[in-house]
Every structure is written in structure tokens, then in C-alpha cells.
Image (cartoon, rainbow, N blue to C red; front, side, top):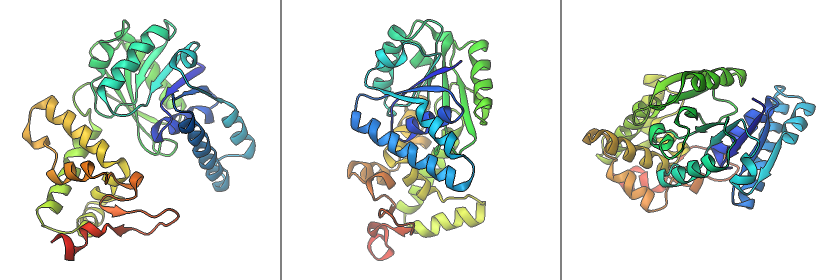
Length: 300
């Protein structure tokens, strides 16, 4: 396996492209938006520079990594010679199904089709292709170049050969792959999202403030980041989308998203990427500041 295609150049897509390129795979990074591709290359360059500064990468390795990445504006052009395609588009089921229909048409017959989805059924995705045995979930964690876990999700029809190939490939990327079966939320988000949702309910019901909730979880449960700050980092819209998948998939009211989360997403307060969620974010600042909306005098 030498040629990788990555669909989507956002946070996850550029991180996946960065990681494969660093390990000397040839990568076609695909996005219909040229501005998004330009931004992705800028981000990858900046992150490689950070690795050089830390001494974990040489200047020569940085240059080689960047040279390993080629950008494309169409799936057809970008996947023609790919051995593995990793889809990292927005967490939207209709969009993913459309992409996989296109992949089935344009990808080489031998290619493995992987999705970086964090919650959507691999079995459902595979069903729109003619190669269900070659469709698998490859759920990287953010930030991809740093986080070790890859959740490898077997769909109903995924073959042992495909699974073993992706497990071995993940190890070659110096990741730790964990094989799981295809049920809503898999393992990571089936456990994480209800915790985040409960933290939001704890705020919504006035039990404690943003800072207090996160401090309890960091100091009491040894979490490196509190659940509300983590939700901001993931994106509140992404959290909401995953909770909806869990709620729809299991039909259990315990997965129903908190009304506060629903309202924040509707108001455009989606976390770090929009500059405000439970905290407010200022470019160039590392200060952790609770959003004005949740200052005690205003929210309680």
C-alpha cells in the first residue's frame, strides 16, 4: 500500500494527510474548495514546523512530507491510483453516502474505502457501494499527528483481510489500533458523548458553572481537559450530530441532546472554531476564559 487519498481538507483531513505523508506515503488530498486546500497545506506546514522545533522531525523530513502531498479538486482525479481512500468529510450521513457512491465508481477495484466517521454506521455506508467487504471505519482522534488511538470499525460485511490490513497499516503509522464492531457511536463516542451531554445538563440545571464542572472532572477524575472545554474543542455542532445518531440509533431517551446544546448550535456558538462556546477564544491567546453567557452573574 503506497498511494493514499484523503477526502476533506478540514481539521481531521489535513491531520490524516500530514500523518501519512510523514511516514512517506504519497497522499492525494481532495477537496472541492481550493481555499480550504490552501489553508490545509498552510496548517500542515505550520504543524510540521512545530515538530521540527521540538526536535521530533528534521527539516529534511518536513520537506519530504510536504512533497508527498498533492492536492486535487475532484474525487475522480484524486482516487484513480489510490490503494486506500480515507473519507474525512463533515459528519453528515447524506454527504458521506454520496461520497462513497462516487468512490465506488471511480476508485480502483482493489482499493480499501475507509471512513473517519465518529458515529455513522459503516454498514450503512458500505451498502451504497458494490464492495462492502472493502469498506471499514478508520476513526482517528484529534489532533491526528499527536493522538495514538485509531478506532477500527468493522461493518457487517467488512472482511478479515480488510480489517487486518488497516490494523497493520495503523501500526506502521505508530498508532494504536483498536478493533470495534459497528453500532451507533462505536466505543469512543458512545461513552464520551453521554458524559459531555450530562456535563451540559449539569450546567443547564444550575448545579455548577462551566469552570467548576470542568475543574471537578480534571482534578477529581484525572481528565486532562474538562468535558465542556473538550466539547468546544470537538465542535458543539459535531457533538450534537453524534448525539442525534446515538438517539436515533438506540431509540433511548438517555442520548437525547440537552436543550442548551441545541440552542447554542442554533445560535452559531459552536466552540473554539467559531470563537465561542462554553469558553471564549481569542486568536493568539492561550487564556481559558468562560464565555460571558455563562458568567455566574448572568447564567445563574
